[in-house]
Amino acid sequence: MRKKIVAGNWKMNKLQADAKSLASEVVNMAGAEVSSDVKLILCTPAIHLDAVNKLAESSAVSVGAQNCHSKESGAYTGEISASMLADLGIGYVILGHSERREYFHETNAELTEKVNISLKNGITPLFCCGETLPQREKGIHFDFVKQQLTESLFHLSEEDFKKVVIAYEPIWAIGTGVTASSAQAQEMHKEIRNHLASKYGQSVADSISILYGGSCKPDNAQELFACPDVDGGLIGGASLKSRDFIDIAKSF
Ligand code: PEP
Image 1 (cartoon, rainbow, N blue to C red):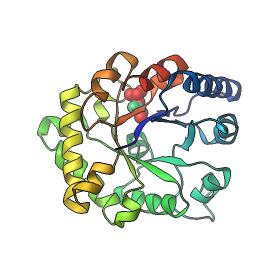
Image 2: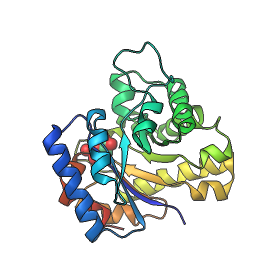
Image 3: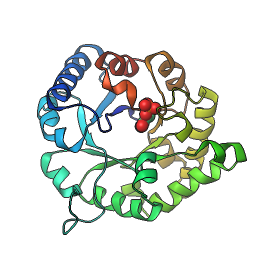
Image 4: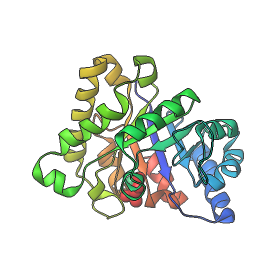
């Protein structure tokens, strides 16, 4: 049975007081309303990680970062290491989000290092992949996404690979209000799972949670999560409202 996961990516939003209120609301509502077989993760700005982690401490809600540096420590002004996250008790990190690939020029090779250092520190990568609209229109979207996965993940041992969560986020659907149809999501998720199986075998591929991200909201989550290869969502905008985030988590 694969883990069902709904992760919120708060991006660069919320000042301290609002971050704490949102986290408390999610923690309280999750305890009362969300089935215990759905894992909720709040990926907050780094500056709020410790406070949110303390608020979530005695709940089933986990906390994740949105990035980490590829090196263990050193002269990298402004950066945060995986070991610093682990030291705070943070269990997850989003890696390879398309915004980081675009604005911070993260490459598949650099992401390989980030994946390695996260796993070494006991942190689960939520590894993002996804194509642009022109790539989809040219019909190269499957190959592009498979290449992202091959180049950043396929060096892992089976034991390490099984710890990774994948998020398919078509870039044209992120923050645009345009959602991939459930047929498009299922088609890509199935293609991803087949690709994982070609490297690690079917039973490993069947154990990996593959989340959908891109304008997922309470009114479309149910249809997306009903797809056999969609195991949950990585939620941007809708994770900033506790009611919406919890309603998405109740959509399985
Ligand atoms: C995201 O950025 O990970 C995302 C899915 O954003 P949104 O839900 O706002 O499209």
